[in-house]
Amino acid sequence: MTAPALALHDLTVAWRGHPAVHHLSGAFRAGALTAVVGPNGAGKSSLLAAIAGALRGFEGRIERAPALRLAYLPQASELDRSFPVRVHELVATGLWARTGCFRAVGADGRAQVAEALAAVGLAGFGQRLLGELSAGQAQRVLFARVLLQDAGLILLDEPFNAIDARTTADLLALLQRWRREARTVVAVLHDLEQVRQHFDEVLLLARERVAWGPTAEVLRAEHLFRARQMAEAWDENAPRCTGAA
Image (cartoon, rainbow, N blue to C red):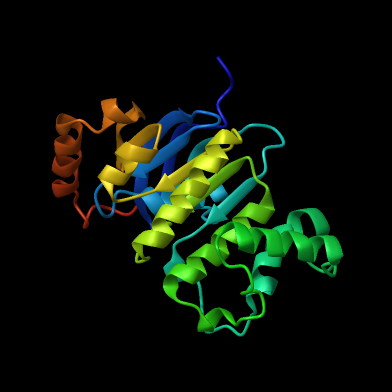
């Protein structure tokens, strides 16, 4: 068996002093599309933020395969579309890992930006301001930036939230391209039918691991019912976690 792209060992993630993820252990299979699903407040976004290094409040271990580059696309709501940046400038930040953030983008870089925009259906949009785009177009821009990062491990937090059906279909096709390229994708999603059709494996999370494995085995009625029961039993007034700051 090949080594996993990412392994979690007794991971506990805190959010505002309360555990968002409890003692989670398991591995994400290299080259697979894995969906992270579960009730609202289950810790899904906190888990991705911890893996990406954007959230430091955790205990346990996160082990990534050596030299595996990571790309992280947070929720679209975290993007300030009023910031006066042009589309090509935002997409070009995907080159920073290779060129450095203070180096000018040369002819090769500009060509790569144009190619990435074309790949997500935004050819000719490079000079537009981000604020001029629709929600779906802005999400395509973020995917273009991920393309330029050329990462082996791609983390997507609710990538299809509040965008149109055509954009969703186009971006799902991009995920299939990443699978063919043996990249590992971990995505937080809510649409279970979408997960059934497009994802190899599922982590069902309710702050704790409910089930983790092949999609058809995890998305069984008894597992989904257990996740709902666990969510209904959450005590939001429980003592604050002092172990994971």
